[in-house]
Image (cartoon, rainbow, N blue to C red; front, side, top):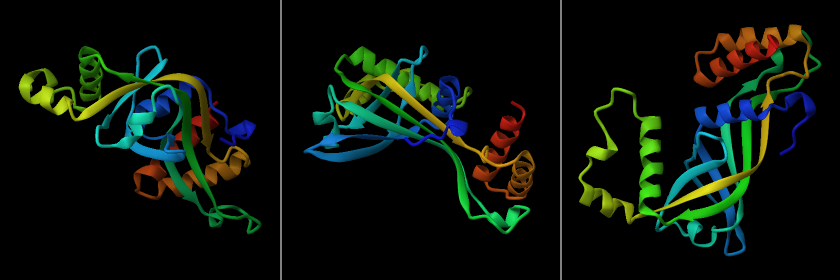
Length: 202
């Protein structure tokens, strides 16, 4: 990923983006061509692996073992209008955050390890007081469902993190952008304005 120096973020910031935006795009090679699947990926506690699972009819998993793959996580993003600046010598742009993870894939064949990863995924997405508990699901039904998926983990070898938040503009212009974004009720615009405000405090 092309990352100008002032848009670079550290690994801790990248891991935060992954945790908050865990629905990723996973790229690998299949039949000699790029192949992608959109799926949730869960970061383990020591930030060394990503865990996920494919639907078994998805052919991507059949050649993926041992491959170096790319997982892309998109954080908030939004359009930045040049009309918000103090000059007409400007062009439109886009502010965003993104993380690229490169790593090797290992298929999970152990049933207990697969269940552990599924349990972690349910815990992540269900609200704390949810009535749904994976351990309460009928074991025979769950075993049947598990036959339809292929678990895997990605050993994280390289991390690239980028936060393009108008850092290449003056503080005054960044404040103008923040003010305009705060007027837009959409979630992405609100999140980008918050990230920009946090960045100005650094």
